[in-house]
Image (cartoon, rainbow, N blue to C red; front, side, top):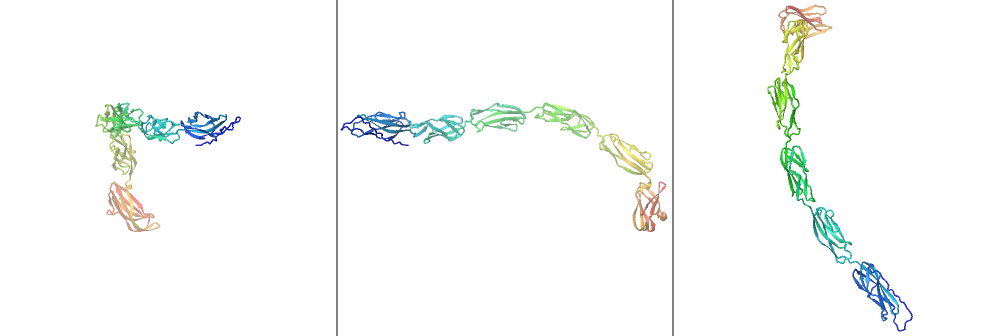
Length: 546
């Protein structure tokens, strides 16, 4: 602390003249020029004068600030409040002279030496409050104000000594002097406000399968720290719960539980899930036609769409006409029968009249599409109906020219004359057709000629060497070979001829014969000619070697 130094003020007033034997005061002084006091402390100032053998003067005392300190008539100084003031003493001698002396006084505050709190520890519930009080030591401490501090305001706050619990945990509250030199501490424990009971808006609940309803809950007390709960279904296959929303899954009964987070408190709701009842049944068609042997699907619609039990049974009024399996109907024979669908729940039914139609013809084909006939030759054409199980397989036959080829009702054909005719078969059901083209030809067209072997020298068409000709009877009849010739095509001269029946004779149907010569000499492009008789008529066929 700054100390001020003051000089003793000396003053003297000389009035008139003194006697030679009088001792006159020349100065006064105080026992202390500066002092420090604390509030309510006292200090005794004393005055001395010089010379000391002079007569004692009269003294008067004063304070420059009586709010800070006071001084009595004997010089006793009393500190009243913090601050500075000057104490002045005035000495008046009997000669009328006056002297003054001053003392500078600083009044200091009374510092705290300790703080005590009414509680050293405190336990609160979240959201509650309690007031801490303090005592400053000493009791006359100048400043009795303190500064409050929470070491963790997230757990507990402090304002003017009022502690408020914010969240679960521990912290400490400090009270300190304004200069921070003296402190006191209270440990604070904040506990949660526990749930004591839970109530639901419903204790019994009935739902239809697929429907939902929300359960709401109330926590007691209202200021419970944790109001979150946990939901549980005892049998989720019957009903589920999610944030209080109960959903019906299947028919049955179960229990929904709601419990506090710590699991110490819970309550329940009994849940019954009822089926969604069937109210009706429809089929996709009241009547239907199908071909015998085929199948089709009838579609049944159960109402409402979300009915729990959609089981359906199917029946037919005549199993010999139509059968039914899970809605699939199959035609057994021509006729009519009724298919009925019936619900398992409620016995609702719906019927469909089914007509089984004959199997229609879809096509026809013949076993032959082309034939070569000789006059008077016969054959039977065979018609194939598609499908094989068509109901009506009746057909009609026709010839494009009955003078060339005739046909009867059974497909029997006969060649009448040389030419070509179309034989057509037509189904009575559907009018499908198939045709066979028949060429009626001479017997000569049934004789095939070729050269099976040859070994020759050919000079400009003149042949020397060995050539054999073959004839094949491709008809269905035997012919009689009567003559064989090899002819020079330039001169027309017959160079080789035979009528030997041992070489010729009968040429059976499908048979062949080879004739020729190994000694041909310089024959120009020879012609090989065969003669035969058939049915009393002479014929010939030939081919040329080039």
